[in-house]
Amino acid sequence: MRRILLTLATLCSMLVAIPATQAHAAATISEVTGVHQLVNAQYNDCLTVVGGSSVNSNPIWHHPCDQSPLAWTQWIIDYEATVTFCFASQGNTCVDRRTRNIYRLRSNHTGKCIEPHNGATNSGARIDQYDCRMDTYRQSWIIVEAQGGGYFFYNAKVYDEAHKERGIDAAPYEQDRQVRIWTANQTPPQIWYLR
Image (cartoon, rainbow, N blue to C red):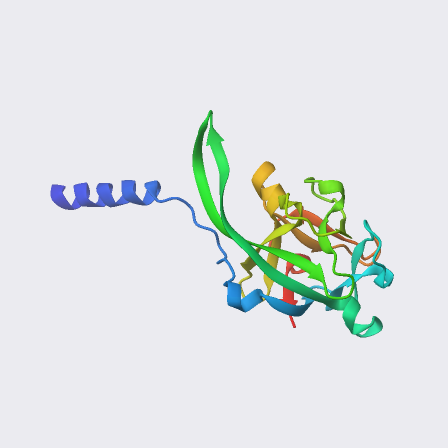
């Protein structure tokens, strides 16, 4: 009996030592790269370049897919790199390293990339388009599968600097259809289907 209790105690201590895992798997590169419409699970709207404008800082919104020209609602998802982030540290020691694939979302119409406005990392920052550049994570996105289908798009700059998962979120219609980054909550406004 004592041997069984010691074995159970050992197993329990091992379970406590196992680090928590993410509830969702990272998307595979072949699943997500290419030209897609991103359709929101809550509203069934497409991620859209407002007015099809190619101006820097032009906002991105969610809009009915059939009410905009197709090119305004198409996005090229390019694989950039596999990166190891330090998600948490104690003093000068990284205690939580996470390796993720990062991607760039580029408008098929304007050729511009999406990013949080002015590189903001706060929850609620709007998303707009800007000339694509490789010198920053602000235009890089971590794509993670949602349970039941679809994907979450987490901004890599927020992930790297604020150590938070903040993803592309569709604001309610009464607010303005603006898309923004929002702290991950795994709700339908943050889930996007590739079509």
